[in-house]
Image (cartoon, rainbow, N blue to C red; front, top):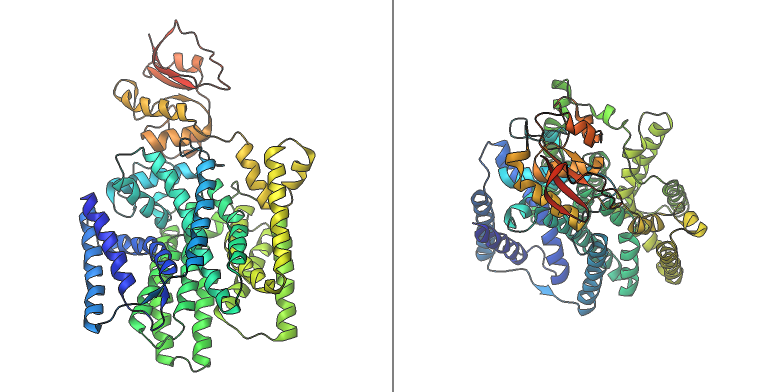
Amino acid sequence: MKVVYLLSVFYLIISFLLLKKTNKKLSIVSSVIYTICLLFCYNTVIVCFYSFFKINGSLLVLSLFNYGIGSILNFISFRRKEIQKFTICKKELITVCCVLIVAFLVGFFRFSGFKIINYETGDPAIHYRSALHFARELEILDTNNSKDLVYNDFNRFMPISYINSGLLLNVFSEFSSYKVFVIYDVLCLILSSLLFFITIFNLFQKKSVHIFYCFILTLLYLLAFPLNNLVFGFCYLGLGIMAINLLFLTVSYFKDFNEQILFKLIMLFILTFSLFFSYYLFMPCVYLALGIYYIYLWKKNKISVGKLFLYGIVTLIIPFIIGIVYFVLPSFINESSMSILKKINLYWYIYSNITPMYLFFVVSGIIIYKLVRYKEKIDYFKLNLYIISIYILIFFVLYIFKLSEVYYFYKLFYLYWFFVIIFLGQLLVKWKKYVYVIFSLILVGMGIVYYFPNSKVTLFLTTINIYNWNIRTFNEDRIIFTESELEIMDESVKYKDICEYKNEFLILGSKFKNFWFYSYTGSIPVFNYQYVDHHQLYETNIGFRFWENLANYDCLVYFYEDSVVDYDKDNYEVLYSNEDGAILKKK
């Protein structure tokens, strides 16, 4: 069935590519990247659709959807007796390959050849666990089917992330699941970088901008917040920005909203729906920008009032209602669910440097100056930039008055960065040499931080920009699981029958190891865990003396600290051991 599903995906992609969308020839390179990224959003809509209608999920169901929709697209092409025509630009293809290689190498070195788990926080363990759950169920999480997921409000989790990662985990279940998950994270980084490149390449083509300039701008984009996103493991955040990027490209590609209305309605619905189901904090500003753009088109007599309402209802109101019902209403109905206002006031770990705010004020100043001085015409890109800027300003005010914490406030800069790089790239087209100089200085700074991690210069550089902060994390000992520690976790699964008690398997290790151990094995790694109290997963109170007094717990997974072995081998049976830890059993 897995082969059938993969063939159905390939069939759907080819069918979509061949469907005629415009009389212009499209770049085959850009179209392939666009279509693969769109597949992530399509998967989200399809899974949510059949889950809402209580259809049991399986690869067969997903394959039937793919073959059915692909056949409809092919039937349309057959009836029209025409297919989309393409062109190929060798420079674009070569540059895309270069971007792909850079993004892949960044991920490859980050995870030491995909042999380790190396994130800045424990959040990815939660996303990994929900992806494993989806790989088994192939249905969107709800209150009933997520009862075995113990440390989050999983039935209101960000579906776009676990749906797509879960599909990969299901299809490639013969491989180590954590490796598939890590590779998936890197794949998302690669695709978001490629999508950004084709976006600016298409924007700048008319201005005869050298393609190398687009490549440098892509690297400036990639090595900042997208890389930071990988470091923290906020995959859902990256996919949300991918959906926004696709939305921007779709509006830019197909500017005439009077042609192929049904096609545009479906495409825009898929993207706005996926955005809400990826990271809904981005939804208000992006939905507002698109709604104002529809009104702008109507004011300019480019669409009728009827089409204004049609586009508004299908691509904004319907996905908004579905999203509100799924995410927001439960917080009013269920007392245990947390409201949005309470959530944005929670403190969690994130990159929070003051320099993004300096950038925000500089860019905002330039925007205001250009608006007053040149009275620039409105377009979809500028609308997004203006409204997102106002949105950030609102959150900044909330932050000043302590109504919002830094965690949710700084997440907005991951989105803002996408529009800022395009804005500054357009602004500096005539002064490209300054962009090259800035990029060279950034590379030098990253080199200093990497090769001289303990110098005073490094300490200074890591406090002034995100590039240096990111590269610093490559040197720091933040590795959650080494290759040999992962072997211990693999081996512990084999001893669940003799070691596990009440779904608990004791481990002696850090809180991050608690998260990942549970996510990978399904065994709760703490003593006397209570489903109503999730905080025990943060504790590391298991010690040898404590363990010896527990009558029903025969085994302990012990991860050595700094390779120091400090247990008496004569007192315990060693079920498995290596240089980084052991699985011990009481004699």
